Amino acid sequence: MIQWVYLSVAIVAEVIGTSFLKSSEGFTRLGPSLVVVVSYILAFYFLALTLKTLPVGVAYAVWAGAGVALIALAGYLFFGQTLDLPAILGIGLIVAGVMVINVFSGSIGSTH
Image (cartoon, rainbow, N blue to C red; front, side, top):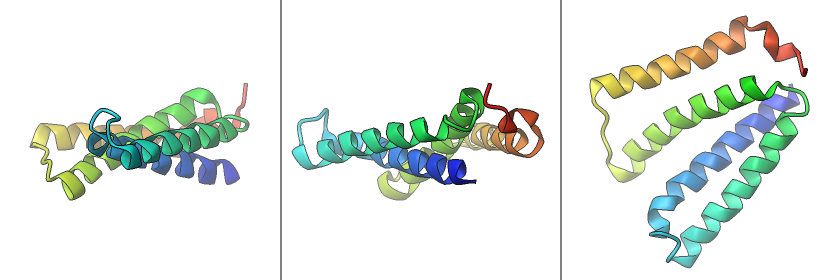
């Protein structure tokens, strides 16, 4: 169960880092640039902890799917970026794929 906590922390840290990339203005602003670097270090550290017990394919699928959805949400909430219907449907399919992996895949219990 702790692997899901680690993966959640990794995803949130990656989303924070990616969100601050915009305000770092190409790493020319120190504060946002530090948030990006620290967030990515935390993200990869917790992803590495996750990979001790979850298969890399499953962990990465959840990481990528949740990250896409959360980044789209962050773009909407913080940057006023909107998505059209095909983008929303595509993100929905990604999230559905992650849910299928979590609910139905026997690979989650396997580390080899």
